[in-house]
Image 1 (cartoon, rainbow, N blue to C red):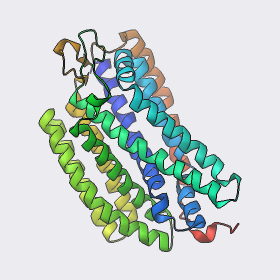
Image 2: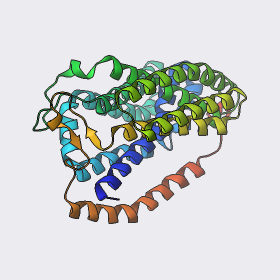
Image 3: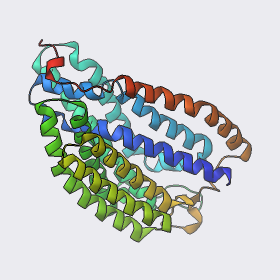
Length: 332
């Protein structure tokens, strides 16, 4: 297997991990005003993701770094053409991270409400825009023969991309609700489990519509198989959530999101950014890649450090595996 293909797969794995892990804490952030009826319940929700949300974002940083080093042409064209959506995602993530740190600094309800709003919108905006971005990557954008983006913002807001944004938001909401049910006790757990089933039905309908549309644009045998498996995993997760088997439900939604992202990359390959304007402008895993020597050095670095990072993050989740509830939150 060529190094360009290996690094395409590695970038796909990194983004898949990011959407699975960051997906549930985006979902928890969006559910903050829905499931958190008072300050103590909202603190329970925040504490479910408190030890892990920043570690989940490392997957995005690593994916971006891998794109920059392995596929610099893809990185440059993507970040110039998608500048505004990616800037909005960055600002939302900054606001969300600051909110987690500053919410508890003062006791006034108005102070906490403002930071709660930052957590909500800081979770909603990336959840939608990531779907819009990846839908456009797969659909293709207007690129010149020199790989320059020749479109505008409205070109990115097409019906297919907007459906992608709504779909990712719904999937993350479902994933987050299942995670809350898995990590909490008492009334919050019951409400989260019931909400996961209701939102999950909507997410399933949207996901089937989006994946079907995706396969009509670009497809391969692997993409069809992955899409079918993603739909089956989501339905299995919802069935488990319905009978309050939160562990299996979370596994189902995680696998569904992972397979859905894998479907997009499988349908995209060997392209990395198709052009709708000029076929010569299409970026592929070959013409967007770095030199073979660079890819070789990066491969050795990845072999050494990837297991260390995975072991550390796995240990973090193991340490903070216990359920929490309102009884664990002191009354201020």
